[in-house]
Length: 436
Ligand code: ASP
Image (cartoon, rainbow, N blue to C red):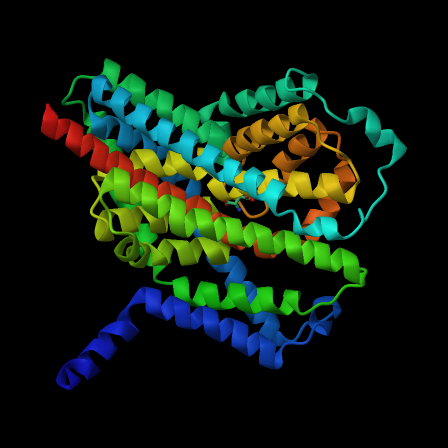
């Protein structure tokens, strides 16, 4: 064994996931040693910190650059790759059922835990409900707010494709790609040049993606350095409130870990015959990218690569399931929103009826489907959830205190859900083909 050690170490050092992990650690450790909170408010930041911020922003811009064209063309490519509408129907059915059921399990887990654990109730509610907010309490699911949510989602979905691409309206891009892909399959002859063109455009986008991914260690070093600097800034809230906030964050983290390390791997084991430990090792890289970018969409390129090269998933399955999942399947976001709404209701001393709890459940699901895979994206959907059960909107400010660190872990769960989705759909379609 000893004979092979230097070689294996060399391999390890060349391994991008290993480099990324070391870069992440280096970012945190270096920031802890040299950074000062005063850097954040100083009119002129030290040149080194300016450089780190520049590296972070350029790396994120490079990832963002690929999101819109990639979702658009890979989704069209996925749909036409599937080739016939009969198969598309089966694939779409399995995918959507998987997405909806795992999201429901995540929210269910959150609500179940909140009722039996609710650690923060050891302290009195921290904030008084403003008199103006009480009339909003317990708006039922048939009220205006629900119609408003559905209207907003549909308006975003049905946007012209050019505007959707330019404005990075992910829901609009997905809807257009979906419709164009299905129409191409139905209308064009099987040997149409257009199919070939979409295939080649995808190849070009992937090549550019490969170049961007090589920058991963630098980008992640810069992101985590800056994050650690920001975290070192203290605040002046009372001890009770801080304890409640930390308890809330702890519960969200614990539930996210249970869903990510137990529920999803079990689903993968039952429905895709994948070993939990081996799979976790294989998907470590996209999870790390999701964790450090807090964006499922920015992670999409890395997830695609992992499905292709490491998980060996049929490309027409992954290019259909992953872009769709990056926008509509967010287990982490749904779980977070449900638990956060119940926590905030307690902080504001609002008692939730069964109807209100059902509304929280339903709204968290709808808003997680509508939220784009961007950092802090769920905060806008969160407003709908709060409004639906009469929690004042300014409660969002409380969440924002703890929002950034929690976004990292829920995004990782969102991405893990998509990856397991691709494995399950791939396995199920292969078995169905084997049977037919
Ligand atoms: N940051 C999350 C994601 O990209 C969305 C959110 O929950 O804010 O998946």
